[in-house]
Length: 245
Image (cartoon, rainbow, N blue to C red; front, side, top):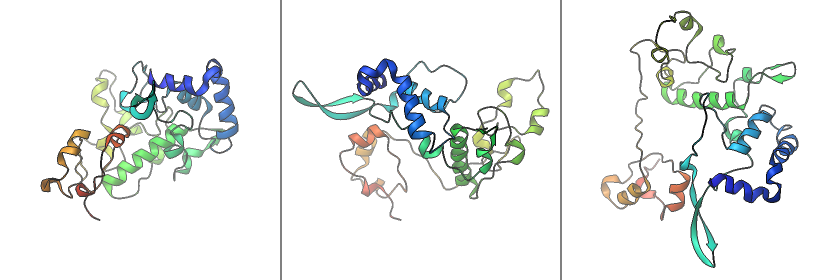
């Protein structure tokens, strides 16, 4: 496993004692700056590389999309080495899992946070998607702010939960969260709204090289997101494909 090789290279002889080292890093470098980052979540990410648990299930397969190439030497020859060269120390919680404009996420009981950095990150991402769709600031529903569990919002309001029949199929009750972006609450039947004026195009690295220099694709994209792997293998920048602001 690529990530495990990085960890063994980083810890060296201390690999078998990495749990104690991670606990020391959390106590000295994280806790005083961001208490919302729970020690168990930080430990889990440092050991397993999983920052956000999507559902209660096992994760036996590695995420191969995180692999990339880095220049190095092997037996005196320069070569590109494929591996995991991402972060293994800081964690992704610092970017979207620490700060949020919703103060209820930082409520404490018995001197302990009732939410974690996962709740904060989920709120920030959901707010971003909502604002892109509804063109207004997202406000977390007050009646859903105290729902127990990992999610800050279940996708079903309390009044909808009361209507659930025990004999109904579970799958039929789990509506897609993307359907709720326009209203900030559980969707009504047949009310799906797609963000207007936005078109998402998924491309591979070879496609970008194919479009380069062709008038048909000149200034076609307003915004481009590149993966770590694609960025490293990109030979030239893409100014001719981007629309001028």
